[in-house]
Amino acid sequence: MIVLPEVRGKLLRNEPLAPYTWFRVGGAAEALFIPADAADLANFLKALDPAVPVTVLGVGSNIIVRDGGVEGVVIRLAGRPWAQITTDGDTVTAGSGALDSMVAKASAKAGIAGLEFYAGIPGTIGGALTMNAGCYGSETKDVLVSAWGLTRAGERVDYDLAGFGYTYRHSQAPADIIWIEATYRGAADEPEAVAARISEITSRRETTQPIREKTGGSTFKNPEGHSSWKLVDEAGWRGKLHTETGGGAKFSELHSNFMINPGEATAADIEGLGEAVRADVLAKTGVQLDWEIKRIGRAR
Image 1 (cartoon, helix red, strand yellow):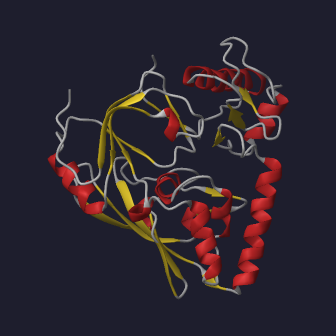
Image 2: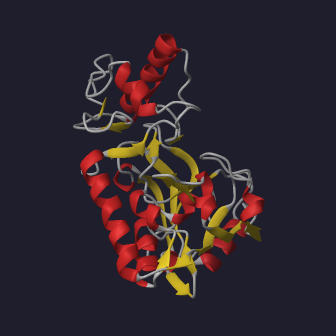
């Protein structure tokens, strides 16, 4: 059993992670830590044995936790201290636990344009920073000014936009940084106009994506020159159950780049479906699909 430092936040051992993810699957964390604030997290990291693995979990919208659970400590940045959003002129500063959609709404209220696309991303700012999240033609790199976080050793690091080295759904910043806060810059606009564009994005998402299902957002990145949903669709996987596992996981009829868990699928069922589709698309088209959904933990 790993030795855990004293904390002010919540620290749970052998905590099931399925309830914390949108797919509602997966095993338990050896330990789950929900820090009270950044100082609590920094002190914890400094005192934790460096050999203990650390994994960060946001709202669990774009992740598969494997059925065997996650070794070490899973850190979940949840609650009011992690979700603060402030505006100043044309800038927006948000905690890493703030929902992307709430950042878009706060920007609209302040009359700041440019962050509307965040209304279409089902995740948090921490995840957006990690993967250069984007949709509908805009990405995090288009509006980010700077961000700061903590290293695995609990030391503060500051990054400006250039330091991230962003490319499509990828950052060159060290993967073990736990992001704490980000600052964005938009452009002045009428709050009503910004809100109207957000409403359009929200409406489009509701009519084209299975947002009320147990899903994980976009499954695959778009290969250069291709759309993943078209490749999955043309390979015949839209709405098709993965009968080899019998778990009922499938790609949505509404959007063929979204996997869903319509019943009691396991993490292995869902990941197995994704791998089966990747293999089939590669065999039929010669195009390699790469996962956008993050997969963590051990197989059972």
